[in-house]
Each structure stands twice: as C-alpha cells, then as structure tokens.
Length: 438
Image (cartoon, rainbow, N blue to C red; front, side):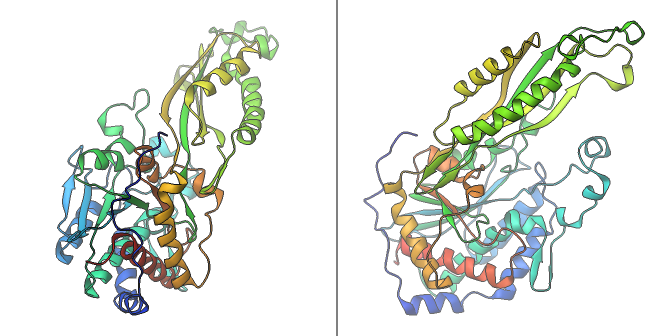
C-alpha cells in the first residue's frame, strides 16, 4: 500500500470527561439496543437479498434524524449512509457494517451438493433470539449486532446533547460476505464486495479521516486485513469408454479425476508451508494466509460412461497485506508442473489483495479505542486474535485507499446484552474522542 499523508489538520483525540462518559452511558437503553439487533437480525438478508434490511436501517435513521440516503450500484442492494455531527472543525469517523449474512442458498439444487440436510435446517442461519442472557443467530453476530451498536452509539450521543465537531458517518453495506462472479454465475447479479463498501467509498459522498469496520473481535482491535484469491486449476485428459478401460497407473490415467488425487495431496502440503512462509506480523495484528480447496467440478453425472476430459479444482488462497497474486500463480504452476501429471492450466478467477494501515497514521484512532476500552471494560485494549486479521473485512477497502481503518467490536459468538451495551459505549466514546465536541 502506498503511504498517504496523515489527516493531521483535523482535531484529534478530544479528551472525554467523566461527566460525558456517564451521560452517554445513561443514554444507552439496553432493551432498545437488543430489540434493534434482534429486529434487524430477523430480517432475511443473505447476499443478494439485502433490500428489506437496508430499508429497515434507512427508516430507523430517518426516524432518529440522521439524514439517511441510499447509494446503490443496483437498486435492490443499496448502501445506507447516515450522518451525525460535523458542525465544527474536527476529524470525520466512518462506521461501517454489512447487511448480508452467510447462509445456505435454500435451493435444493445447490444446497444438496454442499450441505447436509440438518445443516441447512439450523435456525441460526436466519433466526435470532435471546435465551439464557445470550443472543443467538448468525445475523446478529455477523454483522447486524455491531451495526446496531454504532447506530445506538450515535443516538446516545445525540440524546446526551453532545454534538460532534467532525462528522460521524453511519453506513450499512451489502455484499461483504459475497458472492463473486465466477464462470456461468457471472454478471451484476453475482457481484458482492464491489457494490458494497467499495462502491460506497467511491460514490457515497463520504469523506472519512478514519474508519471502523464494526464486526465481532471479542473487543480486540486490528488494522490488518488479509485478502484472498480463488484459483482454478484445470487438469486435462481424454475420454475413455469404461468397458474398454485397461486401468493404467493413476498418474497415467486418461481421466484427470484420477490424477487430481496427486495434485490434491501436493496442494495440501504446499498450503501448510505457504501459511508459514507468508505469515505477516505487525503491531496491528498477525495475518496467517490459509489455503483450502473450496470446490471440485468434473464431468457430467447424467451422461456417464466415458469419464471426463476436464477436472476443475477451485483453490482458495489467503493473501497477507504484503502479497500480490502473480508470485502465487508462479508457485502453483511450478508445483503442479513438477508432478508430471500431464496437461493443466491455472487461472485466478477472483483476486482481492489485503491491506494494513500505517501504524503512525492509525495511531489516533487506536488511542481513542484504547481510552474508551479502558474506561468501559476496565482493561487494556488488546490486539485482536489472528483469525480477525487473517480474513477479509471491509476495513481493507479503506486501508487500500490510504484511509486509516480498524476492525473492532463485541464478542463474535453468543454475546450478552451487556456486551452489546459495552460495545455501543466504546463506539460512542471513540467517536467523541476522534471527532471532538462542537
């Protein structure tokens, strides 16, 4: 990433008083926060179907006076942008969270080749509920719970009568989970990240000095994010009529499905070594780029009888912030060439590079989170677990553009209502510290 100039002309790290902490804390209604998170979480919103959840956020912002607008690459998948503050000279802080949640496709044709029936039937995919003082359901934990926390944080600032000098942007984006346009599933209907925070940054009328990707990190912080590539490895062979087959050794078999066994074993060993060689350690977190086969496609089962000439392996490859795709493709080409398994080709179907904020540039935001965390949790701010800096999150979008960005938020798994309140208060105090009081 190119080093950018700091947004140092803005007032940073306003000293929040104890009276302000108490006033903001008193303005956060736990029941309201939990009800908002559950209401948002129980709106079906898998990738491609975010419209209803987006409208709910828009209406909530409208009712609370945050002047929302819709910024959409496609009408049925809008970004929602609201604003608070900005009445004086201060730094601008943008909060973002995604509207979509991972889930099965709920199509028998697709889910039947990826999931067990009992997995598809799990309530957690689409339902959220409070039980034994724990909030259950993937939509809340990823990511409408953290979204609710910064929405309530903004409301608490307003309710406490605290105007911000800089602007606090409140954004809800589609497509962070995915999907990606690949092969026959191509075109605008299969766009994911390109129409979300990336589109928002370029076309959303926002001018942030700093960004928070509000997601679960167990209250840790990181300004590191990994990228990824989906690499298609095609093995070529020859059709062989089954009754005429003479069963050659696997490495000489005309059917490339047989030769894929040798490739898969080699990829497994390569992936173990790759993760260690490309480990990225920094003050902002550790990236461990992982490798996994995500899909295998070969032949057509209803026209069996002669094997197949093509076997496709789809390999997901993590990319640390220091990596680019070309050396990875060269490595894979060399690896498979040395296996002597016949004709093949390799193509990266998806490429998204990782990013990390410059330590010096992100320091004011980090300091604001540290002060807020100490105040709310009575413990120092910790660096997030490497899993949170070894994945894609939308702080990558902004760090790539030179805008210092972190990801930080509530517990990732089964948070309590009290966890949501603590997260909302940390967000509000951070916003006040960064943006300053008007």
